Image (cartoon, rainbow, N blue to C red; front, side):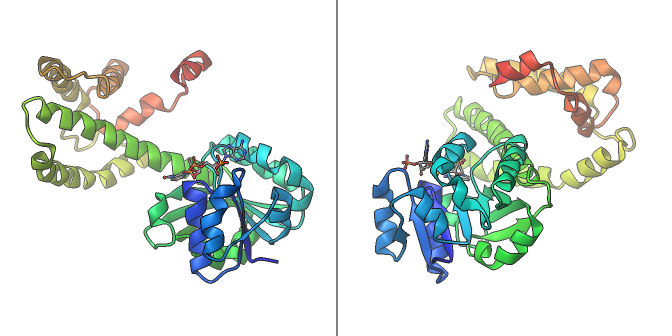
Length: 297
Ligand SMILES: NC(=O)c1ccc[n+]([C@@H]2O[C@H](COP(=O)([O-])OP(=O)(O)OC[C@H]3O[C@@H](n4cnc5c(N)ncnc54)[C@H](OP(=O)(O)O)[C@@H]3O)[C@@H](O)[C@H]2O)c1
């Protein structure tokens, strides 16, 4: 028997297995392409010849594969072996997929934890690597020490969908930031400005902007979008048009920033012209029609 089994040895799965080995645990590994296990075996891991053997080797089984469909596919020969074990799925997915997998695991007698990894592989095993978990509380408590070897473990609640929900919320915030930053670099670069020269000004500005987030959060929680407003949306709509015109004038495509102008205009048309930026959340709380959703992916 091993302390833990890791199924999936891509960039992330290998980093997880390596961190567990480094913390002194015995680790059994399995990957569809067996060659990826070789480096880990040299570091002390045991390579299982099939996924069923890998699952049977440990009470704690961690999966990190590409998408949820690949988890179902990979575990197909091992579903009977899951009973009585804790199954931790660190594959990126949606809250609905996590809830469905929690039921799938429960039907096979396993305790289920879903996880969201807020880190890239080189960060795994360090305190800076935040890993979100949700699902079976008792399983998290029983295996908290082992999971702590992967990074800072944060348990969010019994609903298995909570980890991917917060994972995706943090990632969408990151990609929103990257959109704006990419556009900003393109704009300054349109006059041959070096990105590295622009960087200190950019990071100072973003640091200042971060200090506005507590006020934004307070407004969203309270619904108070109209007291002490210093930058109302009507003003922002007028200024934002300049962002688009200026970008086009510099030969920079406004495709990353144009959706924000549409949203601000929608808010103004909906009566939020005198309101704070935080009120934009009211514009997206209602899901668009299913056709629009499908077109977006
Ligand atoms: N890398 C990151 O920075 C990062 C950060 C946070 C979260 N994540 C998440 O971690 C998960 C793994 O990412 P990764 O970077 O390790 O990806 P990766 O390097 O592309 O590895 C993908 C893994 O999935 C396996 N796989 C794919 N299809 C399969 C199938 N049908 N049956 C069995 N195994 C299959 C691959 O096996 P083979 O080796 O045989 O192809 C490999 O082990 C993803 O959900 C990703 O979103 C990654």
